[in-house]
Length: 346
Image (tube, rainbow, N blue to C red):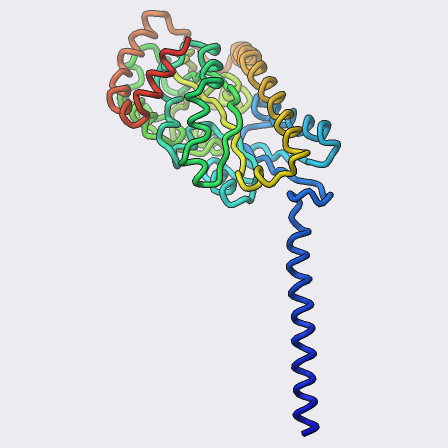
């Protein structure tokens, strides 16, 4: 009987200890959530793939500085440039899983969730920078940012950052006419529109992450690529490319996306300050983009490392005509509402 009593007492004691321990674990889990306004610093990991000297790199750091200032250090933005945390292929999944809280990808990366984001790759869709900025503020853009495809994957779109018009570089010859593209292979971002674009010109394409593009050009894996003046300059493509054509045929713009549960759970006294910082950083990015691209264009000309071709109006019109089949192929995918809506923005 004494043995049985001792065993019963021991079991009871262990049960009490387990119950106490379990309650402590739940309380600890709650207090460890730094996004619940418990006095702990909130950390936003902001991952992107371009260099610190790029438009996106400078704007990301501006955002981090503004957040620290406006929140009095309650929120810290940790910026990870140059694919330090995640590359093109991984950053969207990292955002969905909550391993990072903010990313600024080229908008075409969102085609994994919604093919309409390929609008930016449609050749000669945008007339100039003013046209693209008008789109950023339009209802069309807001609908894309808040689409079911994004929200259903715990993603929230907050802003667009301008980067600029794309130019073409390669290592084989100057590109003036559609025929000059024939037989060449270009690095491209993901998306069927870009594949269709190069096929319409008799060229090939390969999807290569941004951080691996320099090596691919250097090793001859591809003959060329398309990018903004600033990206060409800051990525030092002039070291591995002989020719550049100023074509302004498409755009590369960025979207600022956050993990929706993280953003929704941010304390109500803090989030407006972070949103205010993002608005200022967005204005900064969009004002800086043209200035930085113009500066980079001058840098590329002064380097003397590439032969630069500026298309005449007639040459540009010929290239635009050669690329019209891309519209016939993808208008139903990207939707007439979006394509025609962008074209008709005044």
